Image (tube, one colour):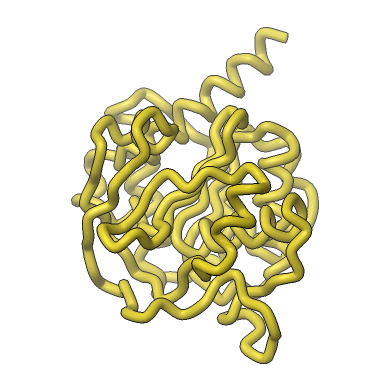
Length: 232
């Protein structure tokens, strides 16, 4: 069960430092031994089709926006289980907006001199905060978490520009998690085996001895894909 961990790995990024223990917990508690490969974003511009899962981790601004976008596109177009957290979520939405909805938009963190931004600075930074996320009944996110809401940890300062939410919805992207004020926190691609993006960081949940339900659900989808491939 090979997964690509797409990010510019750094010991100063908390999510990156916690991933090895999370993978160990998946193995010990869920019986899911994932063979993880760290892929720097400049190397993610191609060659991801052979993985059973793709997880785009936090750590923006990425060295290569193109690499992060290609990771999301490869997973979306090839039915590969995908998890995008924090900046991974942001770039998954950016890829969808451009490739599926045909929008000429950018990310304010990557190109502050641009004209139209899908991702803009949050009015109040969520870095270091926890807050309630309300989930859409029956959604992938709600099924993964097993509850209609969750308290989630964040370390981000950018989010979806609400001016583009309707266009994304028209293009088929499902917004399935919101803050209490209605701000977008979770998105998924209906009909895909597993394509989930969260602005919050499940990597920061707990003491890493128990995988966050979103991560466990992603790992289970990776295992299902790998098993199906072996049976063919």
